[in-house]
Image 1 (tube, helix red, strand yellow):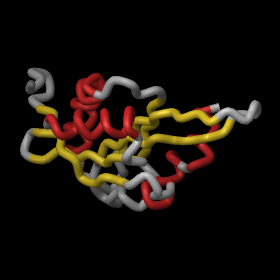
Image 2 (cartoon, helix red, strand yellow; image 1 turned 90 degrees about the horizontal axis):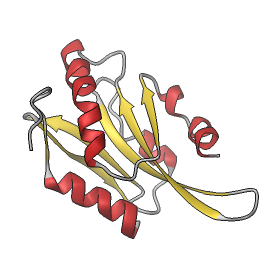
Image 3 (cartoon, one colour; image 1 turned 180 degrees about the vertical axis):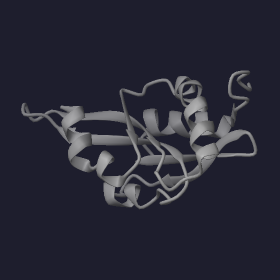
Image 4 (tube, one colour; image 1 turned 135 degrees about the vertical axis):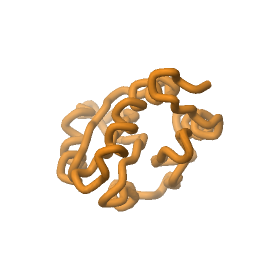
Length: 137
């Protein structure tokens, strides 16, 4: 379960909740954090929560990973959904924390099958709803 390169394990709950987000759509987003050499769930966002609620879930001085299920309607009036992976690494976070999150990101992302887009953000403006919309279309 642990990755030799980063030493990071991924809790089974992370994978299970992601599958529920993807297949059953019972969450709008999931925020993850690294705690005691393991990726764990920090926050689950219900299906009615907004992108602003999602953005407010990120601490200003700590790194996080997150997935967001973005619903939209195409120009042809089709309902679509895209799953975004976001690596949040604010400038104010500690260097060691940034290094741990950066070295563990790819392995963690591989555990979550079905991610369509990735964003890396150091500031809330780098993951604004406009950026998400522009990537989804």
